[in-house]
Image (cartoon, rainbow, N blue to C red; front, side, top):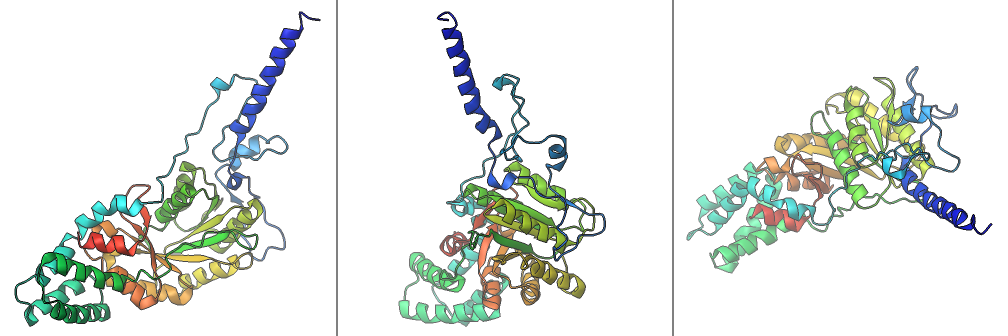
Length: 403
């Protein structure tokens, strides 16, 4: 018996080690559970004929069943406990860049694209003699930057008065004066926080809308990275059922950070049904945030805009919609403002995402949109990289404009 004791101890120790490894290999985010592929007969939205909603893990999940009490994970590989742990394959999940300070790290791009705007204004205001011709040029510069007529008039009037009182033309004084007035226009008092906290036992629901080609799906993917960096559990809903590659594109974004995607198994499925299933899955899995990507639609197409309203109404049968983010291409200037007005009439826009802000000298569109809608710019896209989406900060934005 004494001879067997060391062997028994060794076996017990090995079991303890293996037992400790199992949770590590099978660890899953709360959002990575398997979602129902069929609808309840009482659901208020009906999927297109023959359509079921799946996520990218269904094919694998159908071939194997997780042990009782184990949650399947989008990023966890199948584990064969008969093999040595060293032989296990791993799925590489990217770690998004920290949210804190993103805009500061990216402001060099913004500075480069807005040099003409900032330097032009500073040069004009620092002139030895500021007459009506100079003020006309200041006004023209602001209008070319898509600041809008009303904000331009407001800013020029304020600058006229303060330059007259200041009586100084030093670059430092002029820059400080201009900075103060621009910050007032951008309005740092607006609430730019994203409503992405669970409440009343439900996840926060975010719908992303906009016209074709502004980068909605990419924005949803990048925003998922921002939320994961904040340690939030996220589900993506691929309600853009008209663009064939949209669902796969969104699922790829999700896979990169371990976030599952709910999508239809057929093309042209009812987008409201997909949105409903996404929120339903989010409630069942107790995630923090459900983000729904919608199809691009022209603001002058009544039928498509009505459909967008339907998506929101169907979601509200299950949970309150916390954010409706309108994605706008900053390079479109005043045309983007027209788009924003129409979308705001159909769904209650709560925030603006400006993409391609690094590719335009028309930074004034930030002010124009906020003035017209009373809705804050909450996020800005400053490049093609996966982490080139940043929370908007008024002070940092104006500093970048003025270089």
